[in-house]
Image 1 (cartoon, rainbow, N blue to C red):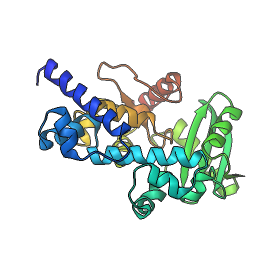
Image 2: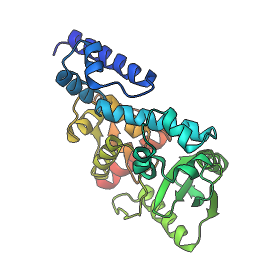
Image 3: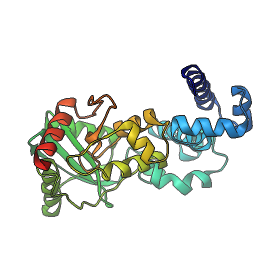
Image 4: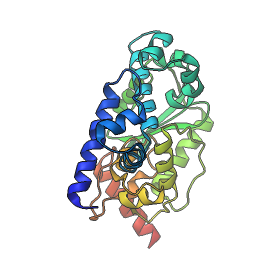
Length: 280
């Protein structure tokens, strides 16, 4: 495919994404394809290749984001669900726990009633926050100071019950520190990983990269069977909530550049340098 044709397809798919974003209910595939001037089969194939998800999955994700915003604004669950374009509350509830991370009523209340254990400490890369739901670790954050990390957790779950870690939790924190300082040892940690189907595939591919190795965003896209979804892979890396446990720091650009890292490029470089030294 020539560069001009590729650019034209990207423009058409971007326009389709905007059409889905603006629609009250998900537009039918045939309608999206017609606007793009492509056959439904060709449109579906190009859309998935460029975004990493199908048009149906993209529309579902957008509806979920609308529900999240409406619930966070205090709207009732029923109003939020129907306003977002769901034609039945049952369809939303079927996947609500996985997409919201908790029951819709609790999400609406800012995590009210949800118990989240957490611990804050120091590691070789600065401040460290580890938080867990009843299922497993849900956040591993790195930063410059403990107060900022705690504020981030409170921003995500402003009404959750935050509980200081007990002796068992301190053990989990020690294992996270071990992942940072001695990644070649590895650690089996209980994780509460929630994200879209595409994000889950990317994160699983990242966890398969051994310490001391790296992969490019393009290589990860290839490994998950979506070679054209390089940008979507980068976005999934940026959305990773579990530093080091999901090692997005091992993904670099094709030109050898570090790319991005939500916890700071200096930390990414330090992690890679340490792993390369230990592997050597």
